[in-house]
Length: 133
Image (cartoon, rainbow, N blue to C red):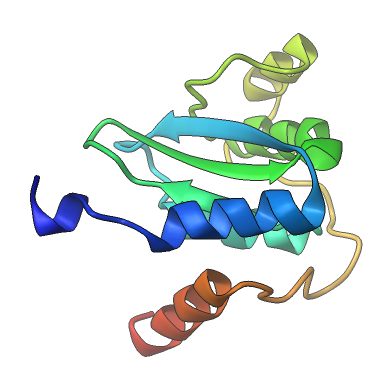
């Protein structure tokens, strides 16, 4: 085991999410896609969806958790944006949005800023984004 393989923060973040926000759904996507995990997170937060329990194991796939109550909405947004999901779709109709909308074409968010950071990981990622844009 390498020191880089040891990640305690993200599993604790996932546990925090489950404990305080209930059941979660896990999304996974190809790591070699045109989206970084943080770009996906910022996009989802614009639409009121926070993520927890980020997974960066291996070089082929990334994953994260969202509230189960928001999972269908998150899946729609991910498909509409063109994120190459590797998990089974909750609503198979969402696959059609990949075909009928150009990548990164998104609906108008309900609010200008979406939801702000909530967990320690959210705050660290936002800080890193400001330091290393």
